[in-house]
Length: 540
Image (cartoon, rainbow, N blue to C red; front, side):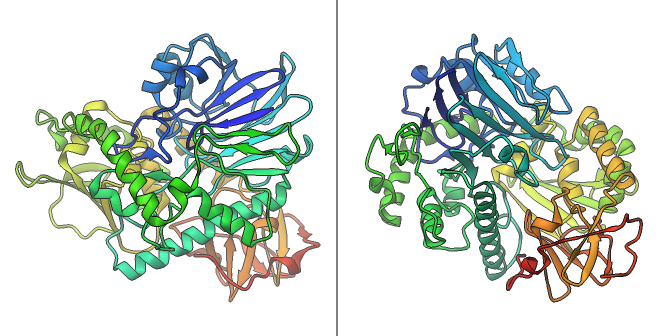
């Protein structure tokens, strides 16, 4: 078995029973903001374009590149399809020309001509674009887990299938926070440093839990070649940057006593079937990673090669014929009428300012109380987004139903809020179709009605076992300090005195001092490792 890195989350896996290509991404994504780093556009993609199997983990544009799939990947390949609640991924792949699909039930191992595989799907409204997934493979001798962006609450499902030889896992940021927030620089640096630490800590927990023989940091970071976004590249010695590169993470692993990390450049071959899993790079990594200066020089060369693609795209974004207010009113009003849980969670207005110095701004209020879209008229609001008018015109022209998978991940906007983060705002903007919205509404309804009743004892507190956010097992991921419980899966926090979520609106935790009754709970399951959950530092 051999693994060839193809950039970002894409790898070509050769096994005794067939080859698998995962998440090929080459073209700039999210309004031309993101590029794979290092550059993979010069690979011989036709050589990798005839795999036996293709796996696309989810619809985020740094994993699903329809232009590249149409041009370079054979339509005779069989697609390994995650079990998601909507058919959007399958429909998009069929639109690219693929016709052969295998769709195993999530978490169920299957065998295809000697190749054993399992796809584990995550399907909450906050998991990717209504779905994210991991792929486990075995040829009978070696086992690979490609977790990419997915964040399963535990890895027991994979460990039960035997020791993992190669573990591919995300380590770098893939979000717009904190860069876009209208906050003082010091506040954003503190948020960024906390997020970077949490990314590393979460991945280290996964690595320790899985115990894989070799670890390959993948699925990041992107790089930013547009001068407007250049400052997001990790080339300034800023430890609050959320996009550290592969070598930074491998140095972190080594500092924690881990020597199993391996670097995958585009074109690197990792020989899993040889002792020590040697890697053969297509060039000396030091030509890029020796210093911030060499990395900057590499990015400038890449910028010169690839920015013409962005300039060509930029010329197509403005649509003067689009009436933003009228279009959003017609589009959003029926959705707002059905968005009971989301509207209750937002409980106010979201202001969207579409800026254009030449043609004039368009200022829109999306009112989740009145369930209407109207011109902004000076109302007091808690949530505001600013972006360019052309970007919103493009979203309307494309009828883009997922603004997270377009505008927000582009980082080409700014955001302001009063009070804590509210995930309901972003869930609404990724559910701009009736199908997605109804799924999200149903998911929140089921979560509220059938929230897990099992409880644990953590420190001096009894509480529900499953995190109210995304159901991580708090006996593994929970920690307590100064009366605050932190779930290390995503860094969310709760005040134990009243169960209030300190990270976002809603999502209260059912808890009580040890020995007292937890509301709506079944008998307490005492955690045999309760002392291990106390930590010296909390994570924001």
